[in-house]
Image (tube, rainbow, N blue to C red):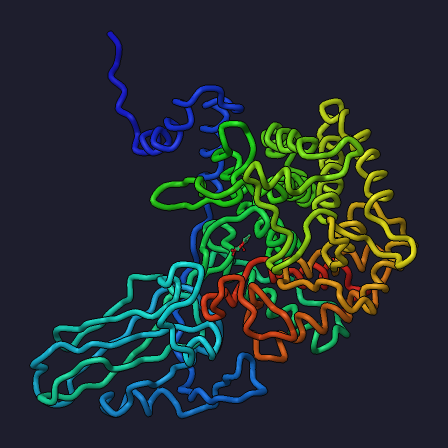
Length: 552
Ligand code: RAM
């Protein structure tokens, strides 16, 4: 007799995730492959470590044109001065937890005169930076959901009460406004605490003796950023968007390899992305963990993030020697290469308009007006080379035999069509635009010879109209290109000025977008909705620790 098999909860969940994928025809991967990848992703899920934190002081917000975004905090007393007096006179108090935290906030409210005869209502506003607490949120002009902003209305109907906000918040400062109370009683707030969460459990090695104070501070700020973003996946930002993006994963995993060494988390993320790939085998740029693992399906195909997956996998293999995982995921990496030749002209030059017509998203950086052609040409060549390297390590070279001639063709096309020998700069698109992005990717891809690379990098400094990076994401590749060009002092100066600039403006964690000349730069038309603890900004950790001779 056949035994009835009771489906486990896990297999029901798997079925919910996999069935839609299996029902459509022609999946590039088998259902078994996807199931095994999900199982491995779940097996590598880290436990979150909880730490109790308490606020350290009260602060006052002060307008100051010389402060970051025009606002700073100044000390305004200790916690006892808040806890020991009626809160009715203290509405608007700002509490400083002393560091950036991600997790769950709890506070207690107690009556000090009479029984409460009416509910109390508070507005709690959590901010990563001071200006977030001083800028009115409404009418909201931002391009992303207003609900990302961390202002919460809390109503307490009975005292005494200990209340935990269900929403996970990411912040350093908390402002408490009293929105409603009756005259019939009085109360105090006390015992604020915070359950901070992160999956980081290790301490990185100390930096080499003799490392400068500024570099040490930049490294510490990068580590704090990375720790906050390392949850049960590499999140892009614990305040926003709280999801796994390939581009962020790649840079976070580089920094992790040189610091916390939590390779299981990298493995988990690589498997999640593989298991949730599109039917045609190409990767979604971002995924969520709840209510069940799923990809952000409505989003445009982010071409270069799919390509960068391969580099992340290669780096993972180099860091861990985990051939089993790399071999398991090799078919995914191999597949990403099949898009390279899709939008090239006959010479081998990338045609961004054609890709965009197909609905592809070409990102490179959040800087309006950036022409992406030269950058994409470079990223494609760079990721092909890295994929060949990965194939070599796995004994799969014959599977990428078409790539070396494609690299030669595309390199020749870039040299003929994008290089301006007179200025020594690479020019992008029909407008022949000069940008930091184009030079960086032409260098990293090896299109530029070493002499050309040095010339291009130096020419940028005097090129008035060059389009500058708007994010630490692109600045990461700019630093990498300077190092590859042998311009080590320039690379160090860039890290000191750019990330050091954030530190000098009071950063506890590194920001998603940063333009030294425009504190309020926002990809979303409203700077308070920017993320001020952003994964892709943590990479000085990688540079400082990988190249101690440059960054001491
Ligand atoms: C931002 C996200 C993420 C990035 C994408 C392209 O909105 O925060 O960091 O990878 O853009």
